[in-house]
Length: 471
Ligand code: F0G
Image (tube, rainbow, N blue to C red; front, side, top):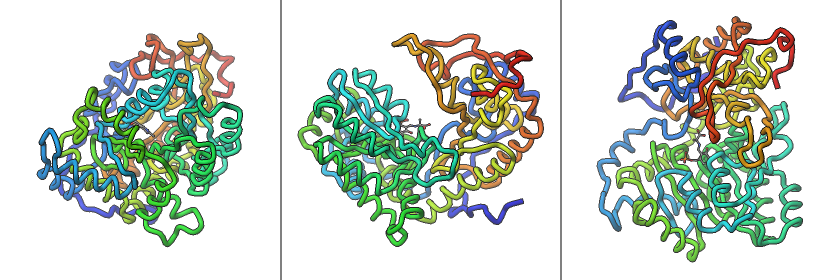
């Protein structure tokens, strides 16, 4: 056993929420009834739920206490002032627009600034960011660094490709590009961090070409912790100081506060451009609420004001990043290839490599996802051909997918290290019975975001496909 490597939790538990492991027969019945789609499972039927780290975290005693201070006034609530003061002090911008989650911040921003056909450049767009840009007639461009596709455990694989960024900018007219975004950590590239050096270069280029530079900073504290650990010159700085240096380099941020806000709901935009603030606030009133609550209750704003401070605590971050690394190490020891190094919020298993007998048309990631539920009642999610493949509804062409991954996202402060051991032991059982993992075919699907609703059936593997590599 590897207990000595376990990061010790910097909290004790005051309130517990029972969870129950169904019997194998019950799990079999539930997953069959869900047509092998884990989005159709009831949460109560999942023993350890690693579907997402978004909005699923546990709040602290200080946050629950703050909730009682919620000022639910329509205009000018004290709760907003506390939230605004905290956001301004960490993100160092003059204006704050609250909203109920990250994708609303994206919707507000792109509805307001995007002109048809304009590009938005990003290290890697998260799905909702991409979706909002496309929906407003824009063109999202991903510019991840080359290392992000490497199998080597290189630090800062979340970086933007600086050469390609400059090449893209010089190859287009200034007015063809709406903004440049850096997503920290880079969720769609394995939750990998972005270095301060890379952020500084992006900022310098944006200012040289007079392009707005924004962060998608859902996991900013996790990114700052990686900078502190891995980048020279930062080991003696506090997370707050690193965050200040980072955010002084940008024009504004969009945040899903359901992650590093340590709360169950919330988001915001913070920016310096007063004229743009006015336009965003106008739309905010139409679709979310008055600018001093923006779709949130006063108590949510209170929980966020406390959570945004707590998330920068280094004992917390050491445990948080340590827990993800610990699970990653144990999954790897169990015999499943993972993306290395592990990132900030999730372990990504390379199901394509693990299950070469299942061709990508039969979704090896889904095979592994179903196996985790059947073996241990654990809910994980496929991030591969099922989620991103199929036919592009705009072009009619087959979409190409890089890797067949499975994401195990760890909710913040929710599961103990024995839950992590349990997940790793389940992985060991799956490895021992690897040949029993099956592929799937889609029986019914929708045109958009098919993975949420599709129905699946166990694929019958053709003998000639048995030896084929699954990617
Ligand atoms: N940006 C990033 C980097 C995200 O990871 C997410 C959500 C959003 C924006 C959208 O925020 O959910 O508050 O509207 N990510 C979740 C996930 C859903 O599971 O990775 P939201």
